[in-house]
Image (cartoon, rainbow, N blue to C red; front, side, top):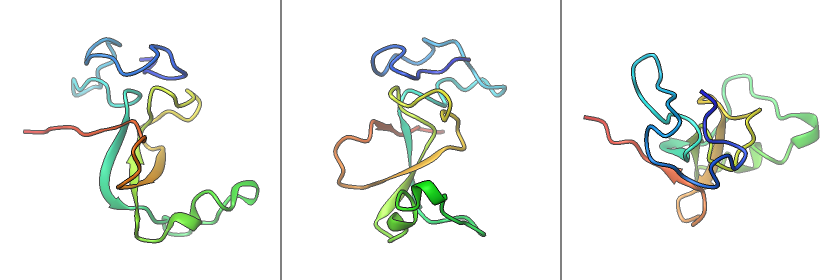
Length: 103
């Protein structure tokens, strides 16, 4: 599916609006909000910062920032995917993040 990106719906939308279920039948995996995780933000093995963007990630490998996955409605569609990682501190008030309840 197209996902909810580039302000397509001007904010968060109800589950199922985009009719983009995964192969397992799960809706809204990307685009309605960053998926907050409890994983501390750190580089993967072999990580090297991009020359033009060196300060964006490694500066935040401090144990105080956590991984956000996916994208929010305000993320550009070229980078919107479940493997996309971003970071925020727990007390930052505007990450447009979500959580998923699983049973």
